[in-house]
Structure formats: structure tokens, C-alpha cells
Length: 235
Ligand SMILES: [Zn+2]
Ligand SMILES: [Zn+2]
Figure 1 (cartoon, protein in one colour):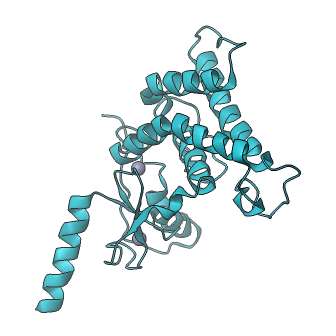
Figure 2 (cartoon, protein in one colour):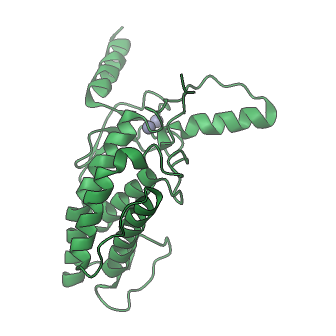
Figure 3 (cartoon, helix red, strand yellow):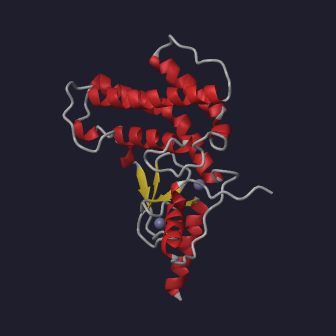
């Protein structure tokens, strides 16, 4: 039986950090990682797919911002420092280039690694992006297990396809101000105990916003956890 691989998703960051500390100075810990099936866990794989399929619609929304040019410098989410746009649609153009460029690079990368024909060129940007999403969707199981970066931890600069999809999605959601459409949850996170549980619009999972935790919960798991807290308080 092949060795179990801890999922590279952010929810295992706390475990990775504890493992590193243990390697450095023998500090024991009692954290258990969520293992991959076989590389990413089913939740991270499921989210990568949903977020990938959301991208064409999000790109259209980002593109509409370019037409209306309503987003101020605050909306430029690629760099952290606020930059004054040189023309009204510039932030949206930069973000579109970033996401579409990333999708096409990932498609080319998969084609070359899997010895497939080259991508069709000479089509419009929208058609190329939609085709890239469809192509990556078809090869997503492969990309999340066999891509050379598939087991890289999901940090911001990782080439892991799942981390990239997540980052493009997050940038587009922030840009189009859809992150206002998040549901916050009253109970503290069952793992880190902080009040940071939320669910973004269209996400199947409730996520802990604590960057050192990032736990993913289903609605049923959250309900059971909240019921247990209430029962504990009543006792
Ligand atoms: Zn995972
Ligand atoms: Zn947490």
C-alpha cells in the first residue's frame, strides 16, 4: 500500500508548522494531518473543481468592471500596495491578464507534461479562457495528483494547480466585491477555538479564517459542533 500523503491544503498548515518545529527542536505535538486521496483530500479536490468552474463567470464580472471602470485603486488585489490606476479599467485589465494568463499557462503545462497537442491559438481571450477551464477540468484529477507541484503546500506562490485555482478565484471574488457575500458563523472553530468560521458565497464548505488553521467543515459538521457547544453550556 502506498504511503499516505498529508493533503497539501491550507488546513494542514498547522500540522506542517508543528512538524517543522518538532524536527528543529524536538517539540512534540499531537496534531494529525488530513491525508490525501491520494494527494489532495476530497474536500480540497472538490473545492478546486467548484472554484475552477466558477472562473468563467467571475472573469466576465471582472471584465464588466473594465467596461464600467468603477473600481478604485483599492480593488487592485494583485499587489498589496495601493496603486493609482492610469486609466479607469486598468485594475480589471491587470487582474484579467493575471487569471487568463495563469489558466493558459496551466493548460500548456498539462498539455506538455501529458504529451498532448498544442492549444489552439488565434481565438478571443474569452473563448481561450473558457476552453482552458474546460481542459483543466477534464485533467483536474491528474493535475491534483500527478502534476509536479501537486503535493506542494498551498502557499500564495505555490505552483500547485489547486492553490493557483484558489488564488485566482479569491482575487476575482475580492475584486468583484463578492466577498461581502460571506456568511459568518457564531460558534468558534472546533480546532483553533477562534471566531473565524465563514462560508463564501457558492462555497460548499465552511472555512476557518485563522491563517494558521484554515479548517474546512461541512454544514453538518458545523451543526453537530455548535449543538455540542450548546449542550456543554447547558450542562
Ligand atoms: Zn485538503
Ligand atoms: Zn480554526
